[in-house]
Length: 363
Image (cartoon, rainbow, N blue to C red):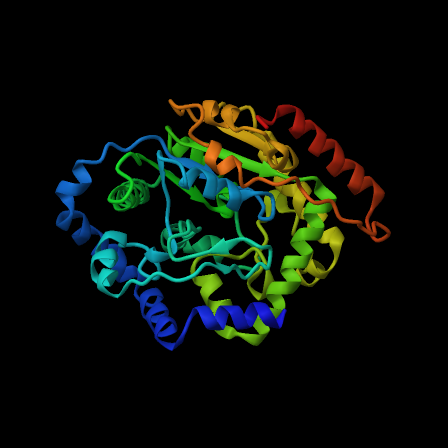
C-alpha cells in the first residue's frame, strides 16, 4: 500500500502539485477560456471531420482501461492523454503553452498496482471533469445521483466542441484519427440519457464474473484508502478528475436507491461490492436493447484471438484495425474467494444476471 503512495509522490512533484491546484481552482474560468481557444484554433478545428464517438463505461476492474488503450492505439480513435492535465477543459491552448516543457519519461506502473504501465502519452480518463463542472449537484452527497437526462444545450455544445478539440490535438500526430473515445466509469450513471443526448455515440460496457469482480473492487478500495491516508494530494487529485470509485473519495452511484439506508463503511465488506455489481448491471441490462449499447464480457475479451467482431460493431472499415491491440490481451485470472460472508441468494442473483449478459455480449 505504501508503495502506491510513494509512486504517486514520485510522479507528481511540488511544481506539478501547485499547477494542479491552480488549474482545478480555476475550472470555471477555463470554461470561458475554452471559448477563446475555439476562436484561436478555429481553422484547425474546422478542418477536422468528426466521426461518431465511443464511450467506454461500467464499473472499474472489468477491462475498461485495456479497451481504451486498444481503441486509442488504433489509427481511427483519439482520446485524452496525461499530457492534457491539468488544464483539461482547454487542451489545445494548454498543449501550446506546455509543449516547450514537455519531456519523455519511462513508463511507470499505475497506482492500481495491476501491472499496467503508463507514460505521459498514455490514454486516460479525464472526461468526468466536464461533467463535474456542468452538473455539480450530482456529486454533493455521499453517493452519486443518476442522470435522467443530460441534454442541456450549453453542455452538449461544449461537450461536442471538446471532443473535436481532442481529436484535433491527437490528429497532429495521427492524421487518420477522426473519432473520440473515452473511458469514463461514471457514464454508466447516464445510461440511457447519454445515448439520447449523443445520437451518434456508441457505448461499450465491459462486465466481469461478479464475485471475482467484487473481490477486485474491494482490494482496490483498500489500496486507495491506504494511499489517500498517506498522501492527501492523491486523494485531492482523484476527486478533482472525478474518480470516486475507491478509497476516501468513494461515492457509489445510487442506482434505484440501493444505497438508501446503507453506510459507506460497509465498503469494507465483500457483500457491499457484490450488491453494487448487481445494482449497476441491472441498470445496464434495462437499457441493453439499445442498438448503440454493447456488452463485452471481461473473460471472453481476455481470451479473444481477434477483435473483428468489436471492429464490426464500431463500424470500422478495416476489420483488422484492432489486431495490434488484441496482442496485449491475456486470459482473466481467477482467484480463490472465501464466500462464507456472502448471501447465497445474492450470489445466485448476480450469477444469473452475469449469464444473461454473457448471452447478449458481443464478446
